[in-house]
Amino acid sequence: MIKDTTYLGKVTNVSAMELDVLVSDEIPSAAPIIDGKQYRIGQIGTLVRIPFGNINLYGVVASVSNIETMEDLKSNKIVMRYTRHLKVNLIGEKIGKRKFQTGIGIFPTIDDEVHLVIDRDLQEIYGESGEDYIEIGKHSSSGYLPVSLDIHKLILRHSAILGSTGSGKSNTTAVIIDKILNKYQGSRIVLIDIHGEYFSAFPTTAKSFRINCSSSPLYIPFWAMTFDELSFFLVSRQEGSERPEDKRLREEIVKLKKENKDHMKSGSVEDHLITADSPIPFDLRKLWYEINREVNATYNTAKESEQNTENEELISEGDYRKLIPARFKDYDRSNRAPFKSKNQTMYAYEKKIYSRLLDNRFDFMFNPGPYKNASMEHDLDEIIRSWISNEQRLTILDLSGVPFELIDISVGLLTRLVYDSMFWGRDEIYTGRKRPLLLIYEEAHKYLPKNESNSHIFGYARKGVERIFKEGRKFGVGAMIVSQRPSEVSDTILSQLGTFISLRLTNSSDQNTIKASAPNNMTSLIDLLPSLRIGEGIVTGESIKIPSRVRVDLHEPCPNSNDPDLVESWKSSHIIDENQYQSVVTNMREQRIINRKEEDNGND
Ligand SMILES: Nc1ncnc2c1ncn2[C@@H]1O[C@H](COP(=O)(O)OP(=O)(O)OP(=O)(O)O)[C@@H](O)[C@H]1O
Ligand SMILES: [Mg+2]
Image (cartoon, rainbow, N blue to C red):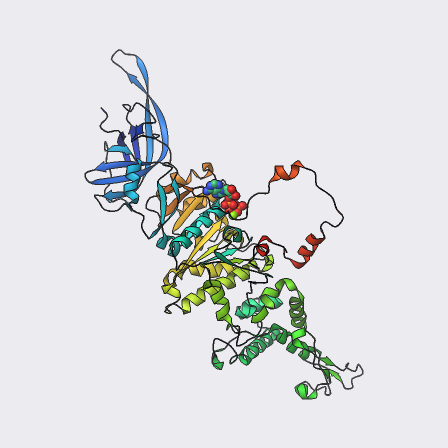
């Protein structure tokens, strides 16, 4: 006899966290109606409850099967019998009135009753969401029951939004940002947006920085790089190389940094503490000018030890700000004065630095506007403040105009500057632990890869972001990665993820990566990944009370990543005009898109 409308069957086998359940054949329907709502028995991914005493254990249905058995009845006839079986992964327990918790203290045993989990039970598990939670959507099974995430764990234990292209990652990211901004007035989020798709989703609530944007230009100054980083991007020096030209470069950079030690708005720095790695402004044009002078000068003496400024055969000083070199009398080829400079150590480096300075695609880094030299008006504090403490709580660092070969170092530098400001400001009342920050990395697989096989990715971004994943929590920095290829993302990052929001994912190696990283008993839920609908996800991990299948809300306006309307645009014929493609070519040359939407709506 059926004891209860939710009664499903009984336990027939228990092994570690896995149960076999025999569905009672007294249940008349595979889709009973309870409290006016229809439930489906044995739906993969749904929950079941195993009560004993005041304890309720919960598990998730992993598989369903119909087993055929033969019975030899008294009549000696062979009768076929079908029994329904479920495999269930245990996930957690609720003792009395206490909160639901993952993990199991007491295991069920043979013949324990198994029940359907109905909305009433789910409400009890979730309880009141309260101020610690943000709601991101509704349970797929219920349609109205909200799914809430513990914001503290979501941010400070780090998270990932994963899914194939078009599965709804950007929308989910936008929903989470929106909920945070609406609920927490002191929140702050920095979003690294390499395709420039997010400003359209937050036109009034975000501050966006972009290369060549006239109102909020993005500058990532080269002088914040370490010597290894800078020398690699400037002159292709390999780490560890200490050839004479490398020593000379280091020496000149230290000299230029020291010249600025008392001219910085944030305060002076003690001379003996300055190294080639110190984030102190200096003018790269000046560096080039000095080196150029050294290589190209002519002298009235042939003795190298006497070839100094006093003995130069100078015609004009030039102007380093305009990249005009100093001019000298031509050297005499018949071994008479003026003599050519004997010091040719920097010959090749001078050429490389000069070509970097001429390439305006690199201006945001090597010619960073007001930050290209030390000044009492503009300093690093202003850059950091503009990114993490501006009039909005969401900052979008739009890297869509950054040349691909600089994406890695750009993300690495941004990350390091933000992280270091939180680390060194950890005891200040306005930042660090007192005002945590979330960094979101869109398209993370592109610059946070498992191994640096791409010729433009050298691990600068990966090392910076891994540091946040390992110890950012202590200084109030949390990270979220968004990616369509989790199998290509750094293992260190994946292993430190507290929360997974996995949307539809079709590639099997990506599914396996999530299986390997998610808690063991979640594999049945992960198996559902290829069959999810757009905007539907499986949420597992620390920030959710019980792993859930969720329909994420739709954020309006959505991030600017919609597919083009192909049919609409192919339906009618297009006009051909000989002036077409000129502006396209200019965009290609300048590496920027002008007349962007953003400029129309006043962000520029
Ligand atoms: N929760 C949702 N409900 C309804 N529609 C959605 C939802 N999420 C996304 N969509 C639709 O799917 C489209 C693609 O979503 P989105 O841009 O978020 O995907 P994505 O995973 O970020 O793709 P990509 O990998 O190309 O960046 C959106 O334009 C939107 O129309
Ligand atoms: Mg996207």
